[in-house]
Amino acid sequence: MKRQLPTDLAQAIFRFFQDYLPAQRGMSLHTIHSYRDSVILFLRYLTEHTDRTTDKLQLLDFTADHVIRFLAHLEAERKNTIATRNVRLAALHTFARFLCGHDPEHMLIFQGVLNIPFKRGAPRVPIDYLDANEVEALLAAIDRGTATGRRDYALFATMLNTGARVQEVLNLKARDIRFDPPHQVRLTGKGNKVRLCPIWESTAQLLHQLVRDADDFTQSDEFLFRSRRGEQLTRFGVRYLLHKYLPVSSGQGSREGARRPHPHCLRHTTAVFLLKAGVDFATISQWLGHAQLNTTMRYAKADMDLKRQALSQVFPEVLGAPAISAVPLDGSRLTSWLRRL
Image 1 (cartoon, one colour):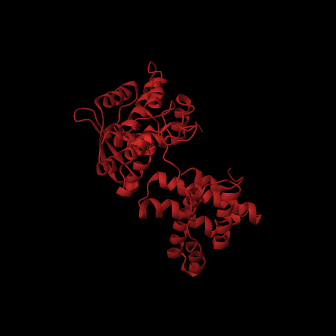
Image 2 (cartoon, rainbow, N blue to C red):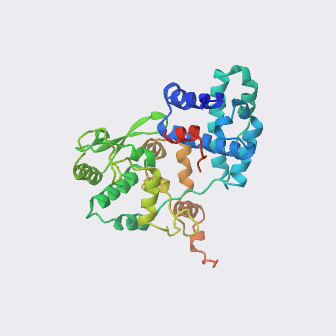
Image 3 (tube, rainbow, N blue to C red):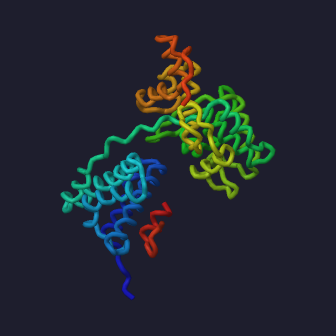
């Protein structure tokens, strides 16, 4: 049986993920995984709407028309938000830009993809954070009498202390922690930017205990937060643990009604608490690793207590007014390879 050679699309995708993103662009593994998921979704859409398997798809299938229909499919069928739709488009834009430099013969086709605009008008979702009672309930629900419980407690304490992104905390290794005073952690954020963040002595002790609990923790380049199988804990694992210890938030702060908390809300929680403590925006921006101060400024709109406090300074009588009652593709070696990234 004659062996089938990979298509030009398969070869391009391989070079894109194997060399261009990690070596030439220096993108983080987290970003590469996000791009991988976008490409897999696009390939799945093409196979469903062209009646061809993945190993039959060609570069000429990567057209603006197909991408536009794919984006519409994300919103209509998969119920993706405009923000998620734009994330998928950003990945396909990067792939199209890569193809322009590696296959100039079909540059006109790929430029058509690059000309697809990001969709505007996505409603800004109110910042979601936990109040003090919810933070206390979260930590109190963890059984620190077990090694797993101590890991979970250290995980959430570190996230609340640093306000770091979930992946930044999960990427922490023993060598990134300074256990003696002044206690601090070294975080690697977006664009591989490194920042130092101070931590409480209690947080340092929790992390030190985490190292002592792991009998096989002999190397400083091993991840601190690992599963029972010794593998690095994932973002999905953190979300599972958060829902386990705090199934439903009470709807305080900027939220309207009870809802399931998301791990990223712990980052927002730290920012709002720092703001309430009177920390200036520049310090909070550096603390969180924001590239622009404008990103930090939105936390000024997050806390309803701060809004009412500001309003009372102008119209004190307002506060005294009476309250008013009120799947993967079968047989696809290309997709399988992508999933192994």
